[in-house]
Image (cartoon, rainbow, N blue to C red; front, top):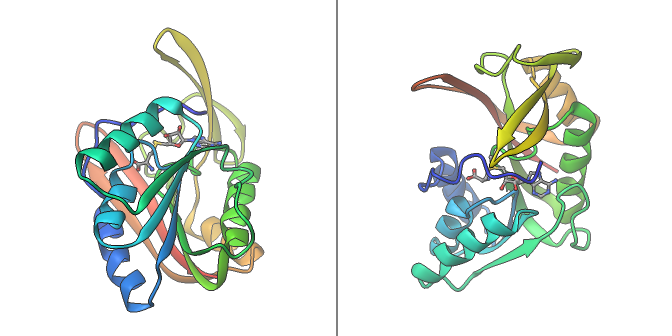
Length: 208
Ligand SMILES: C[S@@+](CC[C@H](N)C(=O)[O-])C[C@H]1O[C@@H](n2cnc3c(N)ncnc32)[C@H](O)[C@@H]1O
């Protein structure tokens, strides 16, 4: 945990570009990016006029994010170093929160904790968008199975061995997660991208 795996991708996700339209339509202003990494989505939304806070525990990622915001002269964006399992914000502080490819890299119990923290810090009726791994992802089945649809992988990053435990969601699993947390699913879409390997995620938009 805490490692940056995708710092090379610099453009915002297409579903974040769509989210910007939804946020604008609903009059949202304050938006939280959970596990913001190098800030591609946070900076894009700030350029679109939203007040964005990005939270991440990696100083390297936050430095890149800050550099990106500065290079684009974006003012409405701040970055906070913190563990997203305990968000350092009061209840109902944001109009919306999202997490792309971040809270998904954990076992189910921690994903639930991260999502419940996101729920806590958005206002009533606030929007929450997250990505979750689908079993169609190439990583499904890699490493050691440590629970149902949950795999432990050891990776060497910059000479250090890092442990990643990932839960892969069947569609019903994902729906159950949101129901358990009293979040209403507005849309759930499976995104499958094939380049060198197949990457498959659920993109779930929900409302508190
Ligand atoms: C795969 S990157 C995705 C970054 C960004 N959301 C994006 O789509 O470009 C995952 C990010 O989550 C952060 N992260 C992982 N676990 C975390 C935790 N418990 N608290 C805060 N950040 C965490 C990592 O440091 C990393 O920057």
